[in-house]
Length: 88
Image (cartoon, rainbow, N blue to C red):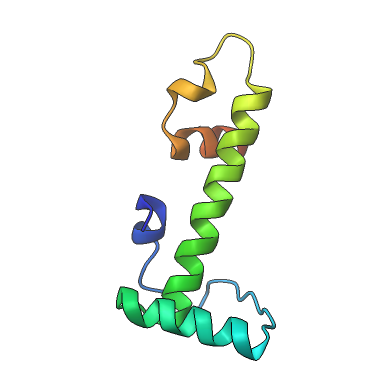
């Protein structure tokens, strides 16, 4: 589980909700993977999505970069995400 996913658990009522539809086969695979990892389905899905989102944002930051700043490849993934979001 990524550090940012761990940081945001447990869930609270004020967080957004993302609904997805799955086929029966997809549902079985996701539920089994969650069970094997010892997580709830929500925890498993959130962690998987956050991991992928962080990699995509970090990869984008590495491609774009900003003049005069540390090379994105030298930054921690969360730092590059925060820079992209304008919060660092």
